[in-house]
Amino acid sequence: MKKLAVFTGLFLVLALNSNVCAQSVKKYKIGVLTKSLANTRFLQMKEGYERAQKEFGVDIVLGSAPTEEDYVEQLKLFQSWLAEGSCDGFIVTPVTATSLNSALTAATRKKKPIVNVDELIPTEDARADHIEIVARICPNNLEVGKLQAYLVLNSVPIGSDVAVIEGDPRTACSVDRVTGFTNAVIDGGLKVVESQPANWNRKEAYDVAKKILAAHPNVKAIFVASDNMAIGAIHAAEATGAIGKVIVVSVGGTPEGIDAVKHGLLAATVAEYPDAMAYLALEMMVRKLKGESIVPNKIESPIKLITKDNLSEGTNFRERL
Figure 1: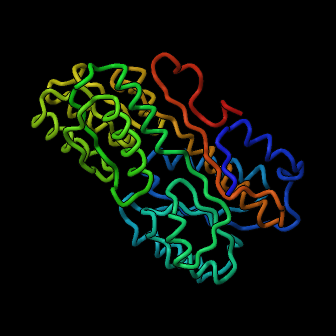
Figure 2: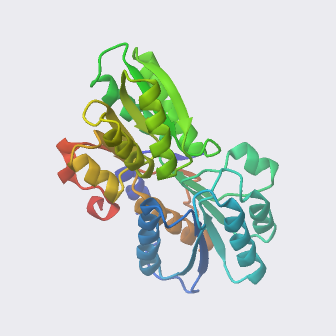
C-alpha cells in the first residue's frame, strides 16, 4: 500500500505522467456519490469535482443523500445508477463506513472501478464483501484530533476537565478524530468528563453541549468533530453564559468554521480541504480508466490547523495550488 502524506509531494508524483490533464479519447462518465449537500463540507467537495471534471474532460453525475443520516436513500440512488448502467466508474463517500457495501459488491462484479473518498470503507469489510477499491482518499483523522488536542493542552491548565461531541459513531472519520483527540489530552494530563454523539447534526450538538455545560460547569474545552456541530455548541455556550469561558475547537475548515475562528467563537478548526479530496479522487479515477500504472491505492489528503494567527494563509484547495 502506497501512502502519500505530503500534499506537495503527492502532486510531484502525479506529475510524472504529463497526459493526465489531457482529455481522454473516450468521454468517460463517472457517478459521484457523496453525503448531504446541506453540509457545506460536501458543497466544497462538489466544487472540487466540478473543477476536476472540466480539467480532465469527463462527465460526472453527482448524487447525494437528503441528510447525513439517510443511508437508505443514498443506497437506493447508487442502485439506480447501477441498474441504468451508463457510468464507467464510481466515486463514493458513504453515509457510514459500510452502508453502500451491498451495491459496491455488485459494482465490482460488473467490473466498475471504485474510488472511496473521505468516509473510508474498512479494508477488512471490503475484502469480506468482495469489493475492489482502486484508491482510498482521506485525511489522517487521528492526526486531526491530535492537532486540536495539542492546542487545548497549550491553552488550559493540567488536570482540567474537557468534553467531546462526536459525529455519527458508525463513521470512521468521527471515531478517528475523537480517538486522536481523547488519547492525546488524556496522555497530556486532562480529564475527559463526557463524550457524546450528535450525529453531525447542529441541533443535536446544541442540545448535547447544553447538557454537558450544565452537568460539568468546570469544563474548560469542548472538542467537536465537525464545524457544523460546533456552531450548535457555540450557540449553546452563548445560551448558558459559557461563551469566552470554554474553548471550542472543531474540524472542517468550512466557511462557517473559518468565520467563527475569525470572530473568536472557535479557537481553531482543522481544514481538511474537501475540494482537494474530490479533485484527487477524480484524477485517480481517470488514471484507472485510462489504464495508467501510477494509481496510489491510499492517499492522505492535506490538513491544516487554522487559528486567528494564520487565517490569511488560505483555507481552500485553489489557494494551495
